[in-house]
Image 1: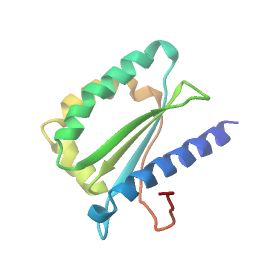
Image 2: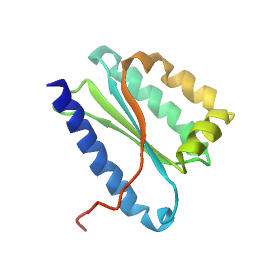
Image 3: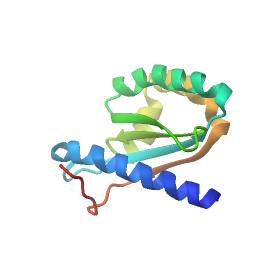
Image 4: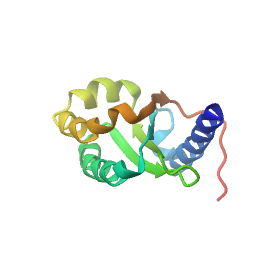
Length: 134
C-alpha cells in the first residue's frame, strides 16, 4: 500500500511538473533546470500551520534568483499528504546558491518544524517524454 501511494505521488508530481515545463518551455530549452519534489505526511492538527509556513516561506523563494516557481499540492484521497514542488535554475544553484543566500535561513526556519514529516526530498530532471493537451 505504501509503495502504491509513493508511486501515486510521483505520478501526480510528474504531471504537475510537466505542465509547468510546458508553460515555461521557451525559457527552459537547453538549460539544466531542476525540479525538487518534497513529500510530506502532515497530520490534520498541523495542516493549517504547515500551509501558513509555506505561504510565508514562499516570499523567500520568490525573492531568490535561483527559484523559477513553486507549488504546494494537497492530497484529496489522503489529506495527510502534501507535495511541494520547487523549480530551480539548476540543482547546483539550489544547493549552493539558494542555500547560501541571505533569505535561506529565514525560509528554513519557517519550514523546519515539519522536517520530521518529510517522506522524500529529491531533485528530478524533466525528460523529453511528455505531452499536455492544449
